[in-house]
Image (cartoon, rainbow, N blue to C red; front, side, top):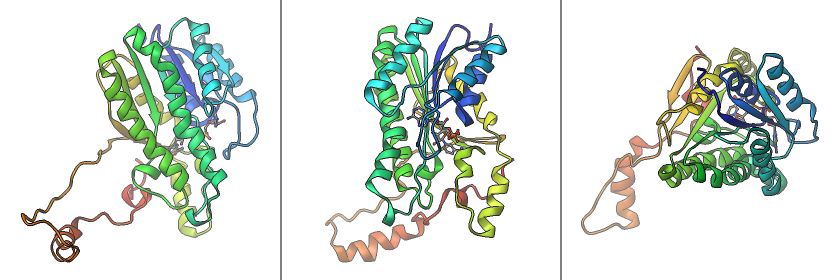
Length: 301
Ligand code: NAI
């Protein structure tokens, strides 16, 4: 029996990149897959039903079961239609993969409200809408699994991505909240923070030699390398509330925020004693202003 035999899975943004490999791998593992994608540009401009249908055709050619869906994750009504479409096609729903995404990179001081909203709508609001629309079904059947895509742009930091970083760190909070709220219904929720060469990464500006060299290394990180972890998380197991990162052949369990150091003064604090005592004692443990690439500073393995 295959690992995901009999399971019904929704993968959003599965018309290309990492999501396409998720859909192919889950179908190969025996799942019925709803391939959702509006077929838009990296910036989220335009629509094309082609990419979702192409992935469905690929799955069917290999003997798998899949249907295409072109509803946007970024609105409540259309997110509900994605869930209905899977239930209609397969009669059940077991796994949601919130993978759809766009980028509108801009330095914070220049970022427009439109650029902020567009990214928050697809990533953070979209993950909420799709997850929330599926929740009553998961609750009723007393089982379910969510996989959300986060990013080290949010977990660590990156330049020119305030909208994306806020959305992706928000998704980590959303995932943990779902894991807590739905544990009593046997529903699990985890995040994957991928590193993969896709058209999304291809949109990173390459102005300096250093940036160009970094991009060349990123090309060795194949999107298909992320899929085995997603297939595992979608299978029957007890893993929940975790954040994993995957980069080529490396898998990381990421930290979650906990108190790092504490200082105490029985008489309480003044701004002056905070400077002379609290800040002085904690400063050696301050986090530097690191970006993702400073923390993941070695080449992909
Ligand atoms: P991609 O651009 O190749 O794929 C994203 C897909 O989402 C596209 O096919 C697009 O048409 C679809 N999409 C966009 N808006 C949509 C909407 N409103 N409704 C439905 N579909 C929509 O990007 P990639 O790299 O495959 O990214 C997949 C996920 O992984 C994203 O959530 C991204 O933020 C995340 N990620 C990727 C990283 C990487 O290294 N590639 C790094 C960190 C996170």
